[in-house]
Image 1 (cartoon, rainbow, N blue to C red):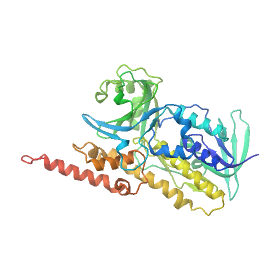
Image 2: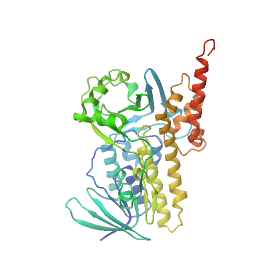
Image 3: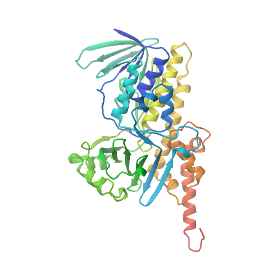
Length: 417
């Protein structure tokens, strides 16, 4: 029987941020991670907001020395239309840049940093059973050799991501409201990269808003290229070792031949049906963070930011709980995280409905509106002074209708634009 103050399940960004913060407060912390690091993971484009979480948890400096690719904005393209957002021009005062990272390197850097700070991280350990009660949580797990172990903790933070350990054990998962989608992706040599294409994530929309391509440049000269579409389309693109995926990205007109002669670093991989939610984010003796809570869609690169945001907040709430405070997990944790998720949900919905694209691809987008949207794209989805956060559920469709009406009016014969 091992004993520890806090058990964290999962050594990804949510788990390491939570563990690092709690270790700084003087708690004994153990992380159980099912996989062996380094390991491949998608979610390679960070948002500026997550830099605050890395800094507060004491992990920022460890990442800085890795010299990951600096990211200063995002560019959206559809045919001959283009709209570039620079984080330095956003409405909310915050970080104006972040990184684009190979997650194997990024996650390993965070895990190594927490180990150096005194957190015990046990890799290749599978959690099999958890019993929660007031004051004592008992977790049974199996190590790489098949040996069984039990660890007793005062509290559990589940940051197991796609593994969704506690949602699975406690029947907390619920279906997503989004249509089933998937992604097929690979890393390629980016021989045609220019300075202009190095510091942005590029998003190409096609197929009448149903599909899109990401291009995420890395510091080693390679670029992550993925196609997101409905499940049937992704299955087709990924078949036969990604034969149609390779052909598509090399010949897609809007990419202008950028990857025409690029070699792949590995054969294309795919993931299907990633959107999922939970019935609740906390319970007796535990809290969920990261993708263990809810994952929406990769379109605005929100995954890691929600992981670090929820990881940090879950740690702060755990600290208060262990100090004997009467913590309102619903109001102070779940509702806070849900507000941010709901903002991005509106933007994901607006992307696939076409409302978001109507706004950003209009002939002359209003500068103030663009800066306010930019803050959302930078991850500052809790800034209630931003009308594109505060009115997120109505502002995109309303503005899109106004733009369409104006464009229709201006297109009439004899009307001066």
